[in-house]
Structure formats: C-alpha cells, structure tokens
Length: 120
Image (tube, rainbow, N blue to C red; front, side, top):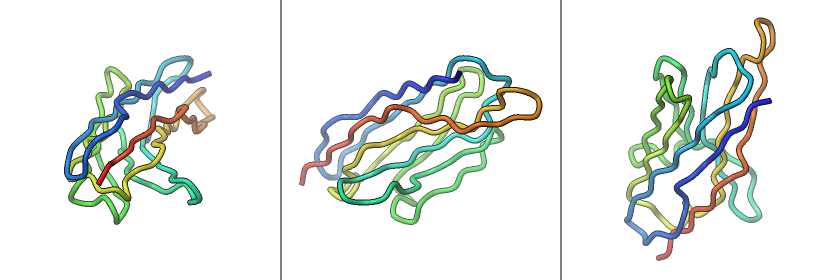
C-alpha cells in the first residue's frame, strides 16, 4: 500500500502564493509520474500539473505560467508552487502518484486532498 500525505493548503488572498507538498511512503519499487489535480464544488476533477521522474512537466491551461511543479526523487515528494492565485483556483487539491508496486504492476494512488481557498 502507498500513502500520499499532502500539506500546504490554506487561505490566501488573490495575487498571493502557496506551496503544496505531497510525500509518498509505503510499499513500492519506484514512484513514476506524480501530479496534482483539483476539484472545485460542482465541477469535475481537473489536471493541474504532472511531472515525470526525469522532471518533464505538463500543466493545465488555466495554470500555465503561474504554477510550477517539481519533485525530489530521493524524498519521493512532489511540490506545487502556486503564484498569482485567483479566486477560480479555489478547490481541493489532490496529489496523485503512479507507483510501481511490483516489477509488472503499476497503480495510481491518491492523497486525501488539501483545500486551497483564494479570497478576492
């Protein structure tokens, strides 16, 4: 079993910044792609950003140029630096990780979510 523990959410004013962290632990061989998704009330969960073990990142269109994803492969931790936050960024942010739990099996795990609220 793989556990993902997120931290860093909270309340921030529009235009401000926050940094989210997500640490993976448990039984796995390696963590492959890690990422962040978010879900606002009444909306579907959407991609925020993902990053490969080599550092190749992809971003959702709404956060490009404002958010930066990074990771520490030694600590099995992924970060999301969020800048120039807008009210529409308010959501519960979920960490996801593709973990190789055996030589032939990869599974996707999710964190419990951390809430980000941006006040205008």
